[in-house]
Image (cartoon, rainbow, N blue to C red; front, side, top):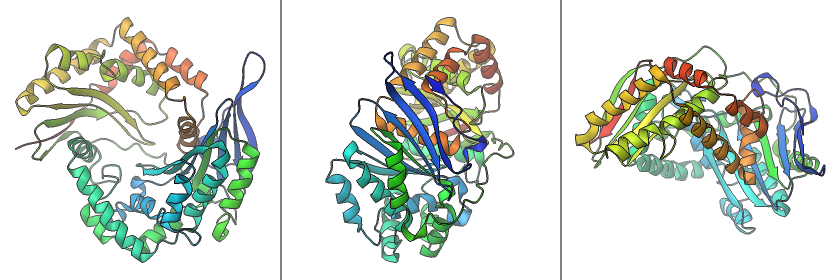
Length: 444
């Protein structure tokens, strides 16, 4: 297998041209996987993984804009725009867009995160040209009609109301707001009733023109994909409205001063049967090398039914049905936490048990058995999670857009295997002694 470091620092556009990043061969010398990357003069990046033995293809258009790029007056604009790009172009109505992929049995969707937006499709390999054309049309030539803005405004307000009825969504939004306050990272991705009601079509159009530029976009594909043909099709599909004309402008990196987390407690009253709790603290930034040790620690602590928290909180004490730990990473900040849902009468005991387990890990780390189990879980989850073309596409697309490097699967496995008990103990001692962030949602 041949390997190269995939991306320049910051994952931003570099000199136009095509490079082969990885090639994997089987024992007979046949290529089983090949990752190639092309940068067009406009700055648009195209990255693909050709997989042997598959008949599907997945494609995603990854745009380097999310909710954290919004000012208070534009809160929810990224998500609003994601919805609107499905509403029609000069060539296709909203129904035409839906029919195009439905007619070939394709899967088609999109999502907005705090740091990026993704439009993605999964089709038979022979239908990849159609998926490329539809996505190119949507991204470069959506009409963003005033009527569509008003119709979709009501849809998004319904979506916000739906999230407000979900205790898990409510408590995690409250946790983020306590941690980062009234900042882009601390606000909910979908916006609020007030911010969505106030957004105008003119604001959305300006936001689209500012962020949906070639140098801020990655087209990623995986499966039975020929890279040269993919580049040719992307050039054709994304050439509408002269979108690919001109040369790339620099993309400002997100890396800046560390955004600190504000400790404290936030509570909200909802007519739920359970109390939902998130207890956590400041974690690691996205490019911190200790993220692999934190991954092993997180798995051992609350990553499955054999984890400490599941065994102690649910199995031994019967305090809650669901309990898990998590770690989230951003360019300049991060969070770790424990999420639990329990009866209101059990809240104090649950918090005491969780705090006790975090304290134990901070003081003594984890055992050899937990280390081995945590590594095994991470390795298995990594490989099983990349069994389909859509997962492969997501891996290379996110790596190209937001990470400084693209690691091969073997390299990720090696980094997981290299984690030691001392590594885990060190990161636990640092993180789990930081001041608490606590969010509680439940009945009065």
